[in-house]
Amino acid sequence: MRKLLIVVCASMLAASVPVGAQQLRGTVRDSASRRPVTGAVITLFDSVGKPIMRGVSNAHGIYDIPFLGDARRGRVVRLGYRPRDIRLPGKTGTVTELNLSLTWLPTLLEPVVALANPHCPRRRDAAATQALLEQARAGLLTSVVQRESDPPSLILYNVERNMEGTSSRIKFQDVRRDSVGAVPRSFVAVYSATDFLTRGFMQNEDTGPRYFAPDAEVLLDDQFTLGYCFRIMDPAKARPRQIGLGFRAADSRRDRIDIDGAVWIDTAARELRDIDYRYVGFPWRIQTLDPGGRINFRELTDGQTLIDTWTMRIIGARYDTVRFAGGYAPRIEETLFAFEKGGQVAHATWSDGRAWHAPLGKLRLHVRGSEGRIPAGTEMYMPYTPYRAVVDSSGMFAIDDLISGRYSLLVIDPRLAPLNLDIPTTFDFLAANDSTHAGVLRIQTAEEWAIARCEDTRQFVSVDTTLVFGRIFDLRGLPVPEVDVTVTTDALPVHAMRTKQTLSGRFVGGFPTGTDGIFEFCGAKLDATITAHARKEKWKAPTRRLPVTGHLTIVPLVIEPNP
Image (cartoon, rainbow, N blue to C red; front, side):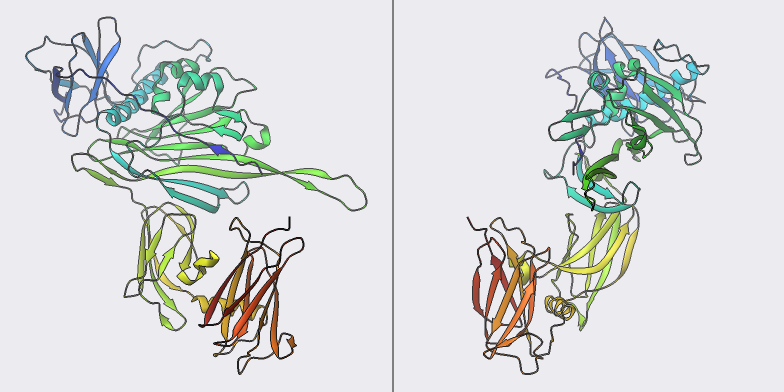
């Protein structure tokens, strides 16, 4: 199987500010209501029109940016307001005051003058499209400048999902908390707009295809604006009070995977909602399975905008050789499958003490065993995730910050650690944002789990019978399947039924392991001595002899191939 790898990473713009620079400071207000305007971006330009510094108004509408010596004019933009060009006043001491006002737009489609891409088809709504583009760029710019001027510390979770076939149903997912802990940014693209226009959004490498996605900086880049055609999207029932600015490449190439997407804006709140896109350029049968992705924006109560979730959906293929009886030639069959990679911001904190916490899923379970309450301190965890919890004295445990998706639970028993095993449960549920799953979970002890396996193999078990539980490993510590294991003991439990072969007064159990390398033997007596022998063709045959000192005896065995 070829695994499709998606890499999403990049660097952030940094501005160099001279020590002791003068400041330009003021308040941005709505021209009608006089209320402070949050998230207005003020950009300063030099005499030749080159941008040299920019800042953004905070929750109180206040901005404070370095006033460099060659700054001559400025421009103020904010989604939902008419852009404004300003002449900068003369400097007055170390701080120059400049209060600004912006005019609220009754519609986001107020016509503007803009240069059209000659490779794009002419549209009757070209002026309205350019107006929406201007507003979308203003919203994107706010998110970028806020991150530059006041970067938060983020706790991120990355998730990979295998879907059921090519559907949207989650079969399995792997969740990882960002390994470096708190980070200053969430989702950013690895290449510039110019690179994407040249290379496309997929590259074939030695390890397989790598897929990419655009971020705010890419969509803001003038090269992206010149290389793509824009349109106003048709209204969508699933998006009430939203308007979409669609984009697609001005020129398509057969050897380039590109994107066709839209930036969606809430027309009531005047906020960015998300960027959704699909990959284009694939063969028809893959294209119909919706490869693409989504990048979600969240505007907080203090006016901060951040990318809180993102996901990519890729359609992969695996190839199997199908052989036929009767001498027919084998055939290669292709099976398509869906794979997702994404991320979630769980927590954001700022240096001044502000914080935001994502409304993620929660789990609250009361744990019981077959004989009543499970001992306090029993540890539970969800495999392939960082989620762990300890059962308290009341038999309860809780797990927070659950990324949406499917989860199972395992019980950790330290006695099984030499076998690299945990006790499975029947728990399986689908977590959802802003919801709590509560209930009762019944779990087995390690002894009960071993007994259940013995009963499955028709080995008799009685109350005075001790249990032998083992696993076969190779030198790398990986389980070895299909190993014949023989366990012998010279002392039988009083009430054990001899369902296995008896030789010279010894009780003998023979057990072939499955794909997990596990074997079990429910026929030893306390204080007896057992001998475990493993045999596999073309492998060395190890033997281990040890006393039965408790109700559960753990036997790890290591075998190695013959030289």
